[in-house]
Amino acid sequence: MNEDIKQSLKLFIVLSRAHKAISEQTNHFFQENGVNPTEFAVLELLYHKGRQPLQKIGGKILLASGSITYVIDKLEKRQFITRVNCPSDRRITYAEITDEGKAFMAEIFPAHEQKLHDLTAVLSPEEKEQAIELMKKLGLSIKDLSY
Image 1 (tube, one colour):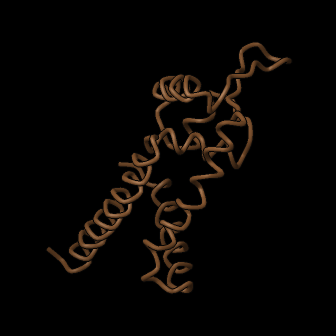
Image 2 (cartoon, helix red, strand yellow):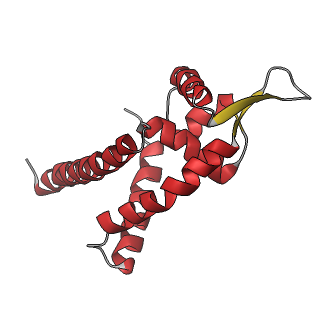
């Protein structure tokens, strides 16, 4: 196996392990706060971006559209979000965060941010910026490839 291929394989392994380590920590945090990662992602989207069409949420948080209805139902039962019909187009329904949902996120989001900061504290601000740029470059280049 040539060295470039070995290095690509090593990069994949290192990225996978880093992602797994961060995901395990954040998932534990979500569980401690009574939500799963997908529920948190939906709440975070609505908390920061406001009302969103149900049909668009899956693409914005990288989730299959079939799973969104289930997550929305669960969050609605907890009164964290509500469905709002579009007055101008009956085909569109929005998800909107409720006051209860906003209060929940206002309580846990700062702790989530701090947790992510703590998990990445081993990197300097310059290293974080470099990692961001490199991961963007990698991700955007892959969109152009097809097998």
